[in-house]
Image (cartoon, rainbow, N blue to C red):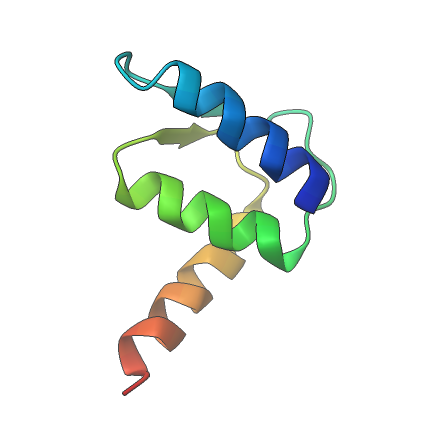
Length: 71
């Protein structure tokens, strides 16, 4: 999943803003930094992210720590 996929996903989610959204990441095998940032922001807005690969979940957690430590 890369920036192009994130842009498409953002558009789809914007169209469904009135519904509860769950992103199933079961088939994602590789993700870039933009994807991780997007998933972190999505969860912060209440979007559920399920079946996320462990390395992506760990990366999201690390980014949250870095963000919390930034001035």
